[in-house]
Image (cartoon, rainbow, N blue to C red; front, side, top):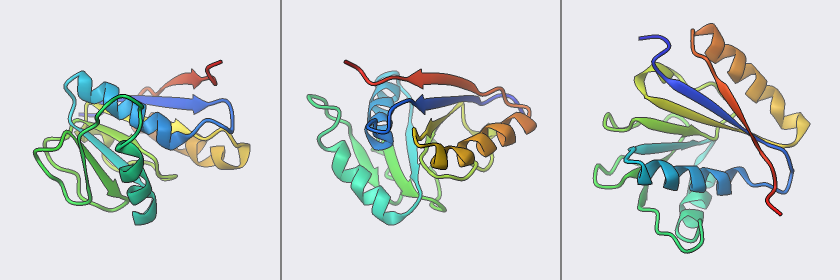
Amino acid sequence: MPGSCQVDFYVLQDAELSASHLACRLALKAWEQGHRVAVMTENEAQARELDDLMWEHPPGHFLPHSLGHDDSTSPVQIGASGHAIGKDRDLVINLTPLEFPDPERFSRLLEIVPARDAERAASRDKFKAYRSRGLTPVTHTMEKSK
């Protein structure tokens, strides 16, 4: 049903802010709220880097996750673009530069917007694409904490 997915854009304001670190924090928060999370990366190398990062970030927390194929016992699944997402997932964090297909399948879709202007064009296109699907994206500004 169009409009049933809540779409949030997290806009990084500082080039020193890491989309991967924010993805880990968002995945942890979503898992703590009872969501079944899928994190989509642009490629296998990025998926492996995120897998490594989730073992240590956020500091002081354990984020149970799996890499690649869906492991129904793992609350967070990391996959490269094109990987199938388990039917039990309800929240997607999209780290790819492309619009996420069929966002209406999920209750939430989180997009992280890079700080560098050259990389923001893809996020603007995704924002417009989701709006054209009848969704109402919300933006959140992410400042560097002092």
